Length: 306
Image 1 (cartoon, helix red, strand yellow):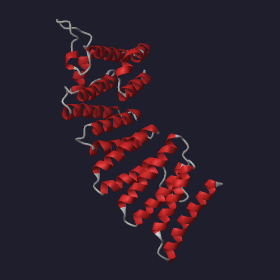
Image 2 (cartoon, helix red, strand yellow; image 1 turned 45 degrees about the vertical axis):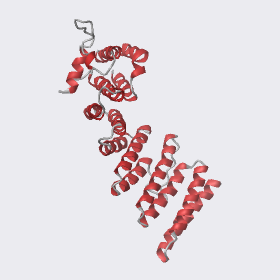
Image 3 (cartoon, one colour; image 1 turned 135 degrees about the horizontal axis):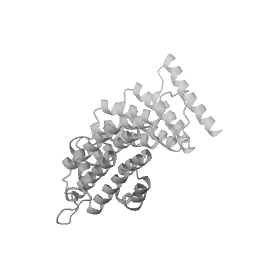
C-alpha cells in the first residue's frame, strides 16, 4: 500500500502542475520539493526506477526554468537510480508520466548533452565514461560504444582516463564483432602508452604490455595489417627462437618479461592451430595471472571461436 500511496502522490503533483499551467502560474519550487521528497521515499522502499521518474520530472521543471546545471544533476540522479535497477534485473519501467526514462543510458545522454552545451567537457567525458561502463555491464553494447567513443575524444591527452576509455571502447567493439575497429583502438592505446608515458616507466610499460598482448591475441589467427601489427606478429611468432647469446629472440624489444613473452607466444600458437584444450590449460595455469581484464575478454572471445 505504501508504494501505491507514493505513486498516487506523484500523480497528484505532476497532474497538478499541468492543470496550473493552463489557469495560473504553477509553484515550481513547491513541486520540486514534493517530487524530491517522493523520490526519497521511493528509494527507501527500493523502488529505484520509480524514484528515477521523480528525478526526470524535476529535470523537466528545471528545463522550463532555464536552469541547465540543475537539470543536468537530476538527469544524473535518474540515471544512477536506473543503473541500480538494471544491474539487479528488476527494471520496472513506467511510461505513464515519464516516457524519457527508458534506461540509464538515455538519462546519461541527456545529462551529457547539457554538459556539452555548457562547455563542461571534462565533466562530460567523465559522465560518458561512467555511462559506457554501465552500458557494458548491462550488455547494451551499442550504447557502450557510443558513450566510450565520446569519452575517448573528450579525454584526448589524458593519460589514465584516456586509457580507461580506450579499454571500455575496445571491449564494446569486441562484444559487437567490430574487429577492425578494435585493432584501431588497440593501436590508439599503444600510441597513448608511448606518448603519455615514457615507455621505461612502470605505468607506460604496463599499458604497452596490455596493448601488445591484446593485439597479438586478436591477430594470431588472422593476417596482420601493415605497420606495428605486422612487426608484432612476426616478433611473437619468432619468439621461441634463441639468438647466439642464448636470449629469446625478440623478447628484448618487448615490454613483457622473457617468461611472459614465451607464454603469450605459445598461447597464440595454440589459438592459431585451434588447439583449444592446450590454450585453456596454458591460460588458466600461467597466463591468467598477468593478463588484464581486456586481454582476458579477448582470449575468451578467441577461444569461443575455435
